[in-house]
Length: 372
Image 1 (cartoon, one colour):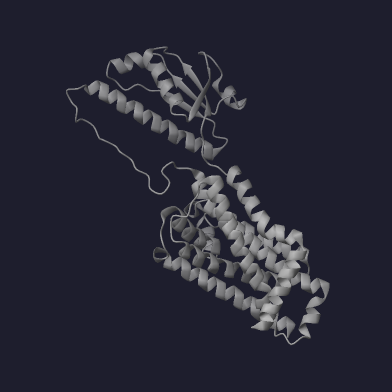
Image 2: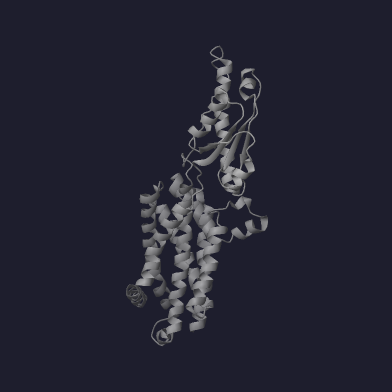
């Protein structure tokens, strides 16, 4: 055990002498959280709205006010009849256009259904879908008000009392959903690359040959070189969680022990994968590139971090079963957002354990064989 601690202490001293490595392990995770946390935001507010009011009635003005007062839309201009509405979207003047036809107010006064047109710029499909949802919500409230006026006080119990309640993220802020995903992505990226570069660096400098002739066993060398990066990765996790709490008001609602256990298993798998990458790499440049591609891309695109897995083609859905970030994010969002423990996530914890044991075992055999 003393030999392992000696290697670990030697690795910590080497990291301390290398400010670039220390910055990458502690500074970059917080910086990436800051950058991606503010840059990745699916919330849409104050979208540019153009209104073409062909009716000019009190009812039409009230409808426009309902859109503006929702804070989802900002009225940028009134388009007179005959305006080329498509041109407004083409020039990026408007994200959405509300067209109120003639006779809108009189149709409502007669107790009949009135029609309006809502045009959305669909170049950004995600924003367009969000704006359509906002418009539906605004019109639902307008319809409810109109129905209440039509029924009058003689039917006080008519209609449906709709009282929605959203759990875990009442404001539907995308940051609350994205930040836990960023934690999983950042930890996987930094743990894999730092471990892979550490082992390959020894190969490039020739110090691996010197270590081979010592009394160290290959297994002791591997464990000793991995332990410092495990400790630093756990410290980076604390930094990330603190930054998420201060900057984005994302607090851990569940037990910290559950978060620690899930993170420890995830990091074991990431560090083992980094060792596996180093066993195939002959240079630090190669280790960096392979580690970047094999850790970053799956963690972003195949984990459910940004894109829902159920929306992916069936073949890619099968591939996601082999991505550890998928399981970690499920546990992480459950603990952070829902306040859950590990009991509801036994399957995810089991996979993280299997993945960590499998990749670490394979990496161990390859590195021991190459050093034996």
